[in-house]
Length: 316
Ligand code: GLU
Image (cartoon, rainbow, N blue to C red; front, side, top):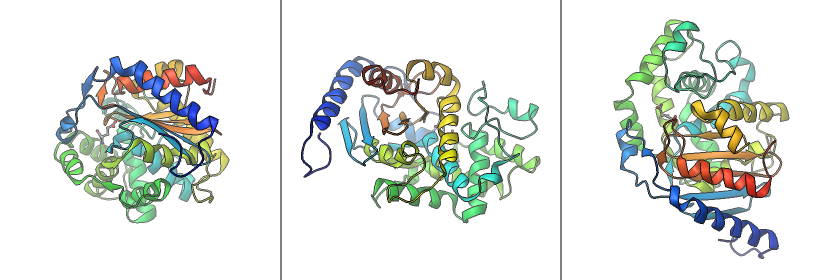
């Protein structure tokens, strides 16, 4: 599927399309390998045989293959946008509330939080994302609405929405996240009522987007902080920091292996999506719901590995 509709087809368009088609063929044997997340029952209903991949270049052109226009649940990918929105409004507010080190523990672990007295290791484990959501809620009065508005604007599509069934399912099965939030509240690290902060967290995790939309929404990180409309969301330094956190903490407990294989800042979610940033050039999103034991999409990692190997577009 070439660039934008109506635009002249260039050699670049043909090359990107051919590359994505080649990747889809290469990873076809991996699609369905692994397990669809079922601890949020609404996610378990998604078919494991889906695969889509989109590439958005910094000029806003989108290329895609497979199910790249089908919407899926962003889940932890949404943590990137909530973090960027807090940093855009008041980066200093994060100081002392959340760290920047990989956790080396499961994304929803309580143990480390106890040792570290309610200060999460980084903004991408669940505890860290709950703190970031709490801060965003204090700054905006509507944390999940702020994330949704941002994503609609960047994807240029007002129909992007929160999947209410997924949000309700997350809340219904959210005991562990509520426990994390209550624990942090005991240390004064959640300002809003715990159920309010958790509800906004569940809601922004339940935003559904396609690979094409998520790639567009992640382009601000490839543009060193500049949004689709040309305005600046983050200073260059802020974009650098979000990308660095994605590189070190974005792929659960496999961030090291992901850096080794793919070599790009990225964030994965248990919905099977992964967004990745090629600074100065492009953003990517790949989606295939079956996950490895760490929670990363099996076919998604394979696809990004092939992408950076074929193009040389890694940060290393
Ligand atoms: N909302 C999910 C949870 O809190 C996010 C999980 C994920 O994608 O890592 O468990």
